[in-house]
Length: 211
Image (cartoon, rainbow, N blue to C red; front, side, top):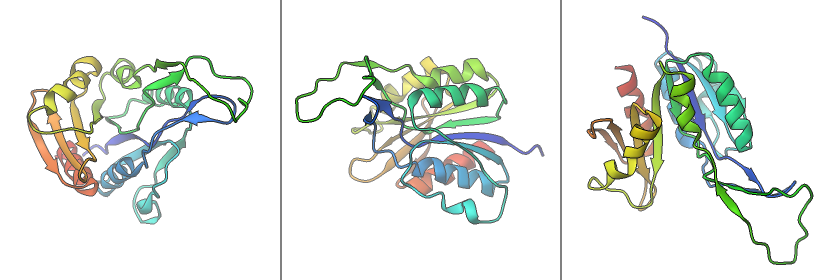
């Protein structure tokens, strides 16, 4: 059986304000790490594109195939690395990184003086996931959708744009409100898995992708 080649993105993404300050988010990278570890347990070759994470990749010291880890911090770095790696034609791409939704329209070339009010002019950032199928159309693409309010009634309405706009094959719709809950959906709106924890979700998702 052919060994799967898997690309996993994880972690937060920085958008600069000036030369020392950034806009970011609270993603720890844990979900991507758990997914990468679950794939390695299945014998896959896994490459991780990893942002500024706070979670430790605990399974990296255990036996099995070593990970290739490519680090990034800023939005533009992630975009460049994705373009380069997708040319390698992975079997599965799991885009779990929390990519910046907004960027500062004009980044200051110097450190902005503190002690005064600051108003930021933000613009929507490009959706990097939309480039995955264009650059690697044969890759099986898994996208992630995080919402504060998520239930079985609104799940496909919220996750649907990732199928239609980005060509995702599966979407993990999840929420942290009241504790982690996640659902794996296919393009027909069927819920393939429901999980009450990140480790359970990672195991279920990889099980679906390798069955």
